[in-house]
Image (cartoon, rainbow, N blue to C red; front, side, top):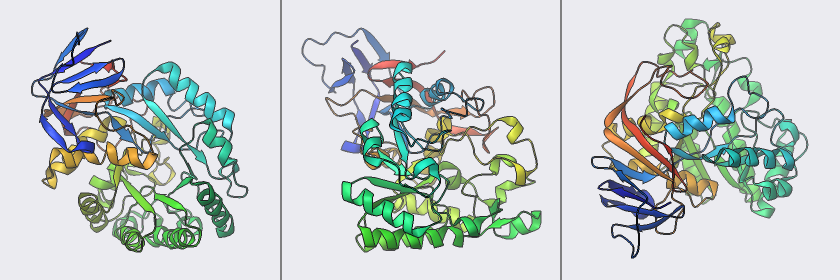
Length: 425
């Protein structure tokens, strides 16, 4: 199908484009920008006056809950949420049930996603068998099955010798390792940032050192092995400083932060709001502000939703017993725009953090609109609003700290390989 997206403001951070321009799509790819190709006849025209036309968003952490947790969400429901949020490419953490440590399981997940014909998925394989931190997974076979990197999700390896061997093996074959910095024995039983709020509420705390101690280990092992590391979901100013120093030294390290930690801090827990029970925990205002500034300066490479649907029963219980997680696919764009507005960044710079930057971390050609590129497109109204309500959220998980908020920007259309997968009702 040939599609003409007319009169929009085209923003493509990968090529520093921000100007009024028409977009022409043919056979699932971008045919041309600005000038109609010879012989092009549109089957469909999308009028985009007053709207922004940008690459489909790329999310580095979206738990779709299949296989194993279909009672929390399904591939179908979360793909619908992705489409409503303009997210066309998703990296999938390996903490499914069973974990993504078998090539057949990865192939099945990719096949299921392809049948739905919505967002593209990029599985992140388990670094160790069953995420137990004891035996390395068959990384080469998992790459052949479709994995783009390897991770322990939220289940850190307790034995540094095993982690050393994993990084050494990954470095040998050029595989990228994604690690969330957690020191399990130091974070044990904790549910909130170890600070004044946790003390006042009587909640067991997780100190910042639980993050920095793990980062010291990861950075030292990366130095020894030459492994390529991506640090996921940084939560502290001290952690960001360690990453900054490692990069200045020349180590191959990238990092991301979640939309929740970009806007919230431990004060937002209020009176035990279980929607603010997250992993990693919301930290201090100082940490939040450091992450916001680090993302603006480029020291933090990318932003992610850390989408984790949780059912109501697991949230409507005491804070310390609630399951960690928040839904975020549909909030990735508006919360990114809110941050960009606050830092007075250009729209091109703002969108870079959720398009080409995460795409490069995945190793994908997504997140751009050059001629010949896959026609994954998000069209949104920058003057519109996203009202966050349970009924508006398409994700099966309704758990988010932003319920009741009006956020800037509203997705109008989402195209995947030149097909309109979301449009106004």
